[in-house]
Length: 213
Image: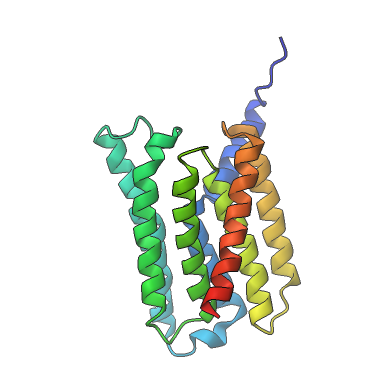
């Protein structure tokens, strides 16, 4: 019988890539990308305030959702923190949707941050809502949604702002390819679930972009 289990080194690399580019980290990465490429959009706040802004984005979009998953696991509402089944993903989807909606709500009332953050936050909120619906039928890839949204958000930022964006789009494409390949190797997702996730992430960012503009 043919053994399709990947070698330990390949599995380690795949898991490492999956952790580094976990979908909960994508909002923080995108904010850092904007700070690097359009610093003039943050001219109204001090460097210290900007650091606090990065921390608050990480706190609200990564730490709290992850901590919620940990609590669900400890309280026996899920069998694993890895959310391997569709049923285990329902409550985390709802929790994440709340935090993403809150970030979008705040972005609408802040005048000292880029417009790109408004469409980005709205996009990830829509993506989580659609992901919850699709979750009733298949276990759509959260990593696919994350990198799909990140790639499209970077492309749209290059359209919105007069920046040299080819390098960053190339980096986003490489990251997307690495994450998709890693999930094919180490996750129990089918290729269909991965590609649907990628398309959901990209499509919702596009919808949010035209909605916000």
